View 1 (spheres, rainbow, N blue to C red):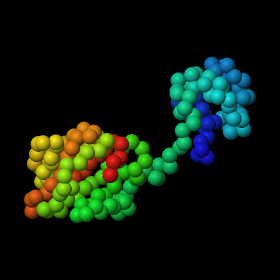
View 2: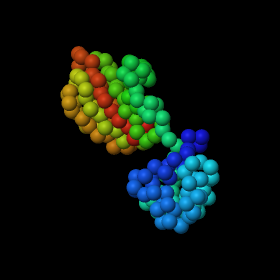
View 3: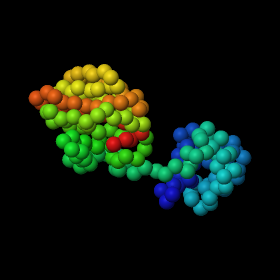
Length: 181
């Protein structure tokens, strides 16, 4: 909660509307001095005042309470990716972490390797794109060979597995929502 500055957010939304603080105070029916104190961080607005400001600015009330993201934490440098190795498969996490509702990774599948012995399922919906090589994907009782540039959507709880029984490495870019690894 220490990254939340309600006053700065009120000021930002007000400026997006192109309003002066007097205009917003009039529309929200609060005093200009109260609005000034809120925007400068000298006063904490009540929930009722936040609701009135949100309505006047046409934004959800909760938008004032969201923590600011440090944008630097959103960037993942190629040489700083988190790497995971599960048996013969390696994963490179392209997302900064597993927080949120989406994670993206690259799965590297060496020749003569399978993602698992049997078909697995998970609650996450998945979309996969073949970056390099060929790969066999099993979806329930069907199997498909995907080549470079092909993609597949795997609905939540669909049984599936990956198998590279070809003689070259395969690299699969995939996104999962919610993250399930």
